[in-house]
Length: 417
Image (tube, rainbow, N blue to C red; front, side, top):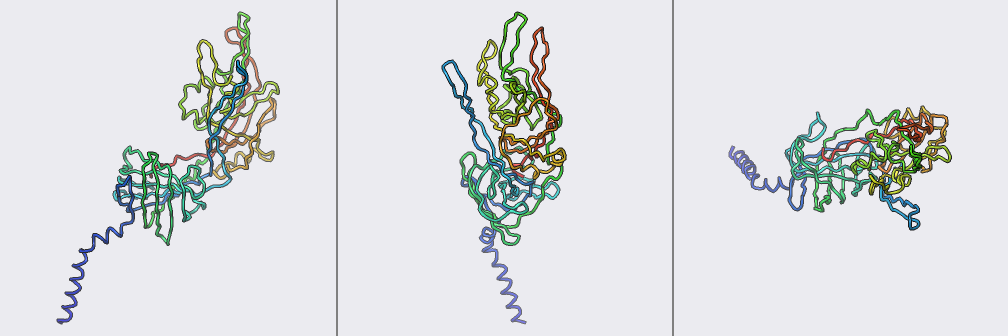
């Protein structure tokens, strides 16, 4: 009996002694940490959100050299914009969210709700169904083994906290069974360092969108820009001027809006970047042709048109879009079947697309925008040039096309989920 009491007493003493080292043990067993500009915070839970596949793109600078004859000889204006290469592959799109205590991972909303320190890393995996372990480098081009991300010291999912965008760095991901180890060393767009590590399980959410993965724009009428407009006024005076006022030759696919050169002068820079399709007219050959928006200024008498009311009027747009005729085997049935993001990865070769007035329709054109989207255009009607009388003056009326356009839908990717 005494022996049993001694054993029980020893066990109780051992249990009593445990708290003496518990603080150190808890610190060592913490699932992770994050350091913002030298200040440390715990990361105690995480999630993996499986999003729609990435289409790999490479956005690069593009310069259009507009050459023309000025008063003192040939002039060369350099218009700076952007172009994109859409690669014939897709990468897995996964968002890794790592959170401080204070967040609740919700099965209902499929995200983390609460407030505290957090970092969200959007990784482009070489496999579309899982995150492949390895080293991932910062990039906006969605190449395999690349990532981008955002972080916040005090994020509030119900508030208006602005996240810090990451601008460079690398992350390493390893996995043993259900346990992930994620280390990151990054900088924000403000230049400050953010680094840390997380070891533990990650709750899985599937946030892929299965419906409405295509933007379909029907019966868009786009007018072909003249190289110049010529007319004689009631006093018999002949006029020749750029076609800046009337022809709605510019298409902003994200909003389905068409613009004339006169209308887009008041647009914000972000909207100007979104104008991705343009149409012009070859009067000599009686044909309309698709043109890159950045090159259309050459038809608008280059950078400026000066008269009593228009001084230093810029016609510059930044987006360089490429076109190619669809293969002859591409039919109405193929156009109708474009329904998923994966359907829009074409073997693309840039070439001029010119459509004679009077062509038999439908005709099909592939397009690759400077914003990194590949799409398909179905031309349903080609409307020839005509004339109309306004105020006693006979003006030319631009030829036009009526078209349907399909692009894969570009989902808004949340910075922090």
